[in-house]
Image (cartoon, rainbow over all chains, first blue to last red):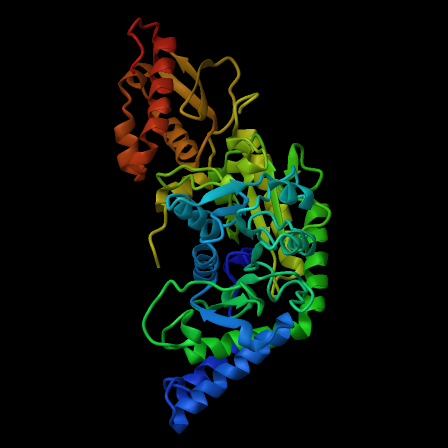
Length: 387
Length: 126
């Protein structure tokens, strides 16, 4: 870890576990062959991939044959949503999602809207959660797919996936879950959860970037039309030569995560509580999301009278995410926070602190102190009754 | 490494906003536009600016530009304030063009302060 930064942006990406990096290097030397080839070297690559599928399957309690490798969660989301919508289009063209989903989801739905699909956008409650009764009320006879994320990437809000999935199952609606922020971080048992399609990516849980997966439940009428064509790999659902080294890395990251899931969660909960207890008394501070039951690795807070870009610069050397893109030309406040009812100003001043396996108690103490001092300084700078 | 959105001067000044604050018995000018709010205060004697201070709510470029204005004009003739142009400071500090609107609010505030001190009847610059 570099010492000139304090990295609190684990929701954006995580450092690759050293054992994962070693495994990938080893694979580049030993499993470089095309896994579709039937010679010895090809079979060796294929074995590497099968081992990784078993490791990821064990993390999710899913049959490895239900896992399709992709380039990451964005591709998985695209494949799941567009692929399922098109496959089920002869039955109906009504789809359901939320405006608080990741862009990799919302933009696919917007694309489908232009292709004569009808999308219902369900609003969250003030804490960002979706009431299963609201989902049920939105279902129609022609509804084919609902897509709701597991853990929100900006707020850490956890949806009741089991209850939402049960609503879908009872109504023969496919249920897709973007679990990019959840896999390897919270317990997921796909043998129990009523989920049909689930997206994940390696780099959110100490694996490599550029590799992800889509879970497709082995159920009747649960299928996706491919987005890519050429080659017959992965049952033609996602053709293309598989990157055995990246897949091996994701597999080992899954095995490591499975072995320490509860310890990681306890560590994150301790860090989050420590951070929160140090900043909670800041005047005008509020939590974006659910302060009581969200994912403990994420804490998103706003102060309404502070300018976001100045706050972000004041926080250096903390590496955190903000709810604005103020230093770009597109000065756009977070659409997720706007959907939760925040004003532009509140969304723009939001800071997402996300903690991880390597975050220390000392870093959290420093970060909380820097946050409090930065707010105090910027308030001192402002003219009276600013903003 | 990719380009830092802030120049070295911006970073240096942002870390040392020594002219932030108020002054007793000062002439003040204050404007709120373009999502920023700026207040400039100056003490002066016989047409010469003795001290300048600012308070501002805005992005780092706005805060730093206010600091730079205060540093630049202390000791100069108050009438010089009315000649201030935002483009000068944008060039010196490498402020990106998309921030022009906000920096123009500083220009208006600086000129307003100059008129307040000098008693000029020159109309505001748009």
